[in-house]
Image (cartoon, rainbow, N blue to C red; front, side):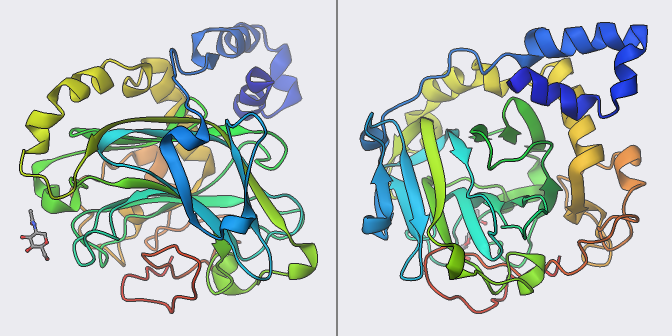
Length: 355
Ligand SMILES: *[C@@H]1O[C@H](CO)[C@@H](O)[C@H](O)[C@H]1NC(C)=O
């Protein structure tokens, strides 16, 4: 199944199948190592790593204890949080998004410490932005460090599959050197830390948050399409949770580099820490096909791209100086987000990026 979907993504036209060279490639791609799931991935039962965050009645554990369903109805959304904060780590879940009409709904999978450091929080985001019927779900990734909320680093994408039909793995790897966002085993974004980023690179312990909430004011086409509770409850499913971080006290005295040295070494040797040449090729293909907004190419917003930006000519050629696509611009009305994804109405705040 996974292999087939990957094939669809790389070989969009049926006719390509009949080109002999491409057929060989296809076989390599679909049945070779690139398609393997993360090697040696350890998953944990829900209660072993997480606790409900809000909307308890709308958080439904699966009978086998390995997953949960998060519901949004007209009364409340719901969410869970990791029981610990972590100094770096790999955060991952198999997720199936609500189907049918889901405009205005945000399903977020993110790490943050906004509850501990109100003014100087760190954050890493994967946010799904709802859809209108028949339209694909869109999603974005973002990062903040030490309260850099006026410097959004959003990228927005489509997916190469329907995320409401099957479970797919979404992951965030955060090490002292780099951040990688994954969809299944395709790295979709890599942020390599550099000195110039300074404290914008997330560096304090964070918790993992997962939420579903009513984001009518901004999620879908910039708030044009609202949540329609005729279709409630909206259900997002999570299972096979992986949480491989170095548990930390956010205000501990021991510098994290010492306390977590062993864990850094462990993280660095894991399969998901390595972007093989095949994975890098898949990442480039994904970004050239499915990314439709990048802050790095938004020169109106950032005349000088932020220091971690790596300009890829083939990517850049697709974007206008607004960071939006030159063609197929049905994404113009995307806008506004805010830093705190709880179940509460948040006005457009100062960190809102006009995407
Ligand atoms: C992080 O932000 C706080 C509050 O704005 C500031 O005092 C501190 O110096 C910053 N830390 C770094 C490493 O820049």
